[in-house]
Image: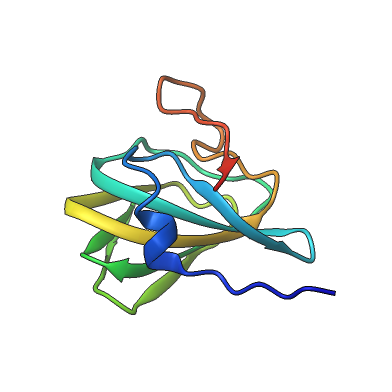
Length: 120
């Protein structure tokens, strides 16, 4: 059995698209995704899934309806299922997402930013 490590910097170098998560691993029905984020995303929620945002490079704010959570490098935040949120990045942020594999990036919203997750 071959075991492979994942070089996150090398994976980030393989794509330029923003707001389009890329699958880098799965475990126990959960997906490990990488995303480049810049600007404002859409307000949305995930009915059945919590969502973890871990900032690897840059800064990210998770806007909630009643507060904002500012994240710097090496900080993470878990958005509980059903909580409406909007990620906002001033400048490009590199983020690791951890969520159930079937989770759609725009949650309950269908628009031009809805993206299928592809593996890299």
